[in-house]
Length: 203
Image (cartoon, rainbow, N blue to C red; front, side, top):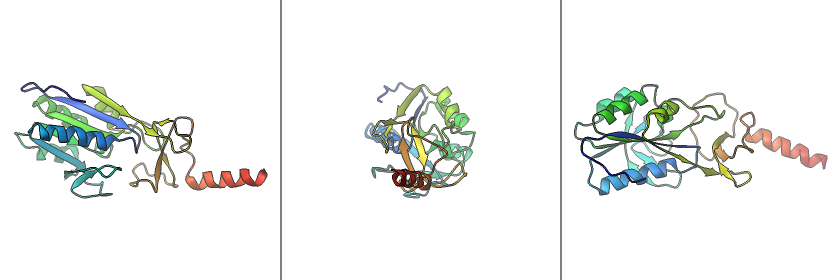
């Protein structure tokens, strides 16, 4: 999405979707265009997310862009320089409940704020604070992945291992994209393999 910027005008853009749907890729694309336009850009990621890099946002397709880490929304807000024009935030769901207020404060200062994150957790429930960000955003983009079972557009993240932790960092080894029909939050890959084996033996 390309937005014509006017002086002293800030807003919030949110990019949401399941894992493997291209959220970080879209975030990086927008931030690179802002950099090409010679705007002053700062980019943040939650300190808890060290899967691919400590100082870069890295997409699953291995696009990357330098970033800073923040421990909380307040920490992020304190690190934004007075002359920054664009703030990018990846993995918004890993920040605390104050992220929407921090984004709104930046927008009120005239900053363009671009946030990417999961809108649903592994149970298919809204993943706070992303719903609150969606409610106050001027621009919303919902990305879709490809279901790894049937190939249809996917809007859910299927967890493949047994765990009740809401935050469980991982990638293809722990998660895959699923459509509404193929998504089942009660099943892990081990359960699916057992069910498939039982079905094969019965035939």
